[in-house]
Image (cartoon, rainbow, N blue to C red):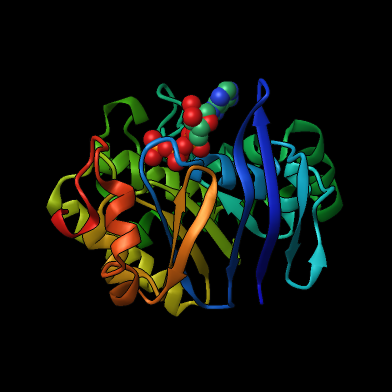
Length: 258
Ligand SMILES: Nc1ncnc2c1ncn2[C@@H]1O[C@H](COP(=O)(O)OP(=O)(O)OP(=O)(O)O)[C@@H](O)[C@H]1O
Ligand SMILES: [Mg+2]
């Protein structure tokens, strides 16, 4: 098992948002995480990447307990998250956004130590090559030198993915990579995610777009009110009456209608 998180509790101002939540991902798998608005999906990703401290639970990554690790230590171990709202620097160009991503994600101090350790020049050359590889991989060449604030919603999502790829992830935690993205771009982003899986990258994907979840996922976890209601193969999970019921009376329709 690549990722194994169990018994996760998280409170905000005394309100329990995650209650005995759990998730796991095998090496090479795409794991979908769905659930109504406010279920706790983003909070779980934030806890897994240690941007938030849980009140209880254990997290194992690649056989090693990481529950007490800091976010940069987790990123260095190659579990990398993206954000529901992309965090690009609007005034920097696409290539510049990629080049600053490791510094941004590891923190200035850790980044400097990392670079010193690997020798500055060699590291800079390697990062520049890697950024150009990622731009090619994500077909962002036409906008390489544009300021990120001028990108479309879908291109911003690709850039957010690219910034995570700068950390050479073994496991990517993606928070709504398809939200606000037009249908053509959705298929393009899905292709990229399939290609990453081919390269051996494992994925946890939080999404409301059920077409993408059904197409991509090997396993789907359903979160409702901070708990995992059920999990399993997409076809099975989407027919589960409890899953349909969990979506009733919410703003979104049940999964089958997406
Ligand atoms: N920083 C915070 N402080 C207080 N409450 C928060 C905070 N972040 C999230 N919450 C609350 O925790 C609950 C879970 O939020 P979370 O963002 O994890 O849900 P989600 O499943 O990602 O929803 P969505 O599908 O809308 O993104 C919600 O009730 C939310 O209002
Ligand atoms: Mg969310």
